Length: 395
Length: 112
Ligand code: SF4
Ligand code: SF4
Image 1 (cartoon, rainbow over the protein chains, first blue to last red):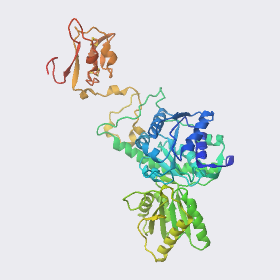
Image 2 (image 1 turned 180 degrees about the vertical axis):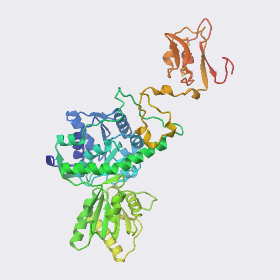
Image 3 (image 1 turned 135 degrees about the vertical axis):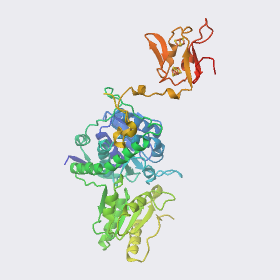
């Protein structure tokens, strides 16, 4: 295990530190609340000679991701950060980055999308980008945001993957709250991520290549999408193996899904991001009262760990999936829809309910989580039937 | 070694370079784009002063030189944009330019 320093700082500072330690060549980003302090911190590193990265100031997120695409195609290790409207403005480049198989690493400080204008946390931004071909990791804590950032570099640049990675942390809750965390020393991180050797680099003039090509009229577009699917599927085992390696280095467990009390749970909550902490707190209290409560946290959302979720939830008597984003008009939120289809292959049906919670930073009080477990216990005892999707904590 | 794409229409998804990269330089020369053209430049050698403006301005390097003299157009790459004809200076002796754009399918200048 490597040397580590205990720090008290915010998720954003830790993400910026992790990025610096991973030695990117180019950082192109546009500041947007609550991501701003990531790029602010990184800009300071650049100004103070703490990173060799070319720090590119751009006029928008559209330009930020365009610059990242260009720099990555040139052969650089590239990073950026965004959230909310900024991620939305990157839309077309998100698909270009993944389609060109460019291993860009981006932090996303989850924030609601307008309208109405809102700067607080929810997952609408990231969930809207879930089909853009990016590997997506979610952090519960500042520590996980730091760890995920470092792992992202290895995952993105892995020869079987070569896809961009979005590493998400909850706006304000994780980005701005001061948290206790362990930081690895620079040398250990540098060694862990290694040097980036691009397969095709525009700046390698001995091996000229061209990026960004037309797939031809009636050409191979379909075949290239299949390649992306193959790479994304392969990413699951890469995420696991990089996670295992990182665990050995840092002494912190990592898995694509992380269960608490799931071995014998009767009732369980499936959740992504910082709310996993609230859920565990309540589950712990319930355990003391004899309720077999569990929490299943999804840490890797793309590729979606269906088999692992199926395994963790089979036999649970009632499950609630919490979604911090909407999929208007669908049967439930995006996490619910995916968990539900993962469970379709089980012989015995797991009663599943969905709660949309915390949109636009609406507070996730412990009573709300308690009410979810109470609903689940009612389903198990037969006093209530599993209901359709509900809003948790709205007036 | 030249990148062999002769079987490209049969390639399976894993046979393509990832990300639609073309892993060699200069191969746009192998791609015949002459079919995009609706008009073709025709040069009258008598009226041509060999100023080379057409060669300088052609965005497709489709003006063919022999040494320092224009001799031909590369019709597999000329897209018929007409820039060469536009830039070709009027020759005072002839009262016209040396290059004229004629619709594809016609053999003679002036015939529409
Ligand atoms: S028509 Fe355009 S492409 Fe063709 S030779 Fe003239 S300038 Fe070049
Ligand atoms: S621009 Fe006209 S005159 Fe000059 S070299 Fe070309 S064809 Fe001849």
